[in-house]
Image 1 (cartoon, rainbow, N blue to C red):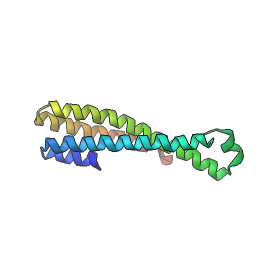
Image 2: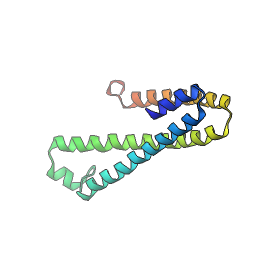
Image 3: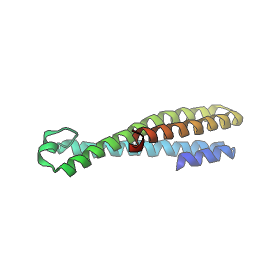
Image 4: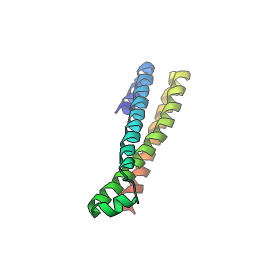
Length: 130
């Protein structure tokens, strides 16, 4: 939500608000990654990870499926967040240095990249397109 809001404030030529919203987005992304670190750590301490003997021997097929999907989905989401944070950090530094007209152009490029990434990601993992 904050990344979309930053795009809107950028189009309204509110550079300060854009930079602030990007900073909030970065903080939220880091909080998510720290949360996943601790969440996965607890699972690993209990011997639960894809292919672990404890998971395969002591859990039902439904639970094995659940944890398999859990690790794949949260792992892909974490990868998405890491890649997004890299781009957002680049944009955050760039927005502080460029003129507003160039910033708006960069914003439009970011929107196009976001649209392409979302489309490719959606089609890549949709069972209807495999």
